[in-house]
Amino acid sequence: MQQDCASPPVIENGAVLGPVLASYKNGSWVEYVCHHYHFLDGPSTVYCHQGNWTEQPTCLAATEKCGSPPSIANGALTVPALPQYDSGSSVQYICSDYHFLQGSERIYCSEGQWTSPPVCIEPCTLSKTEMEKNNVLLQAFYADQVYFYHGDYVGFYCKQNHFGAESGTTLFQVQCERGQLAYPRCVERGKQVWT
Image 1 (cartoon, helix red, strand yellow):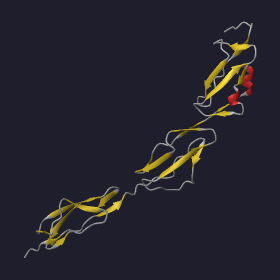
Image 2 (tube, helix red, strand yellow; image 1 turned 30 degrees about the vertical axis):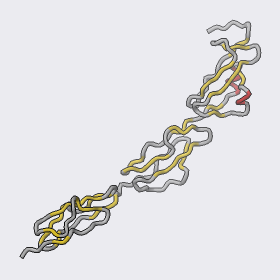
Image 3 (cartoon, helix red, strand yellow; image 1 turned 180 degrees about the vertical axis):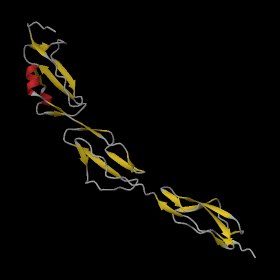
Image 4 (cartoon, one colour; image 1 turned 90 degrees about the horizontal axis):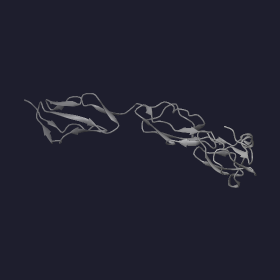
């Protein structure tokens, strides 16, 4: 005599696909699926055979881990790196003093891979030699600064009795671009400018 089966067993982190009945006829089958971030280990389909279900699967947590996060030039992690991270973990970076953080400060471990780390862009360092060579002075607002972040504007003006070699003006705003400042050049009034 053929026996029916009771409801199929409940599995951790998984479920039966479709409605669950109170009883199943001999030869019936059900299919299991796993919840997010878990994968099926074993057969997805189980059968009712003489009042018992065939072996059901288990749902295992995703195990693709990430190694240590990448190091970045002129920056570091906010906490010491571990040798391994679970999927979904994140770490945060900071840049060295005066370096501009471009991108997201936080990266994530996803299926064994880290998302893209940020880049720390070097600052511009004021050069008294370049200022002297180009006959420019730093505007008073910036008087105590030596370093400027990427993207910052720096104000210069020509020394007394000088004017801009190319523009004829005496005030300038120069943007710091990846560690480089294009110093304006001023020449003495009354002197011929040869290019």
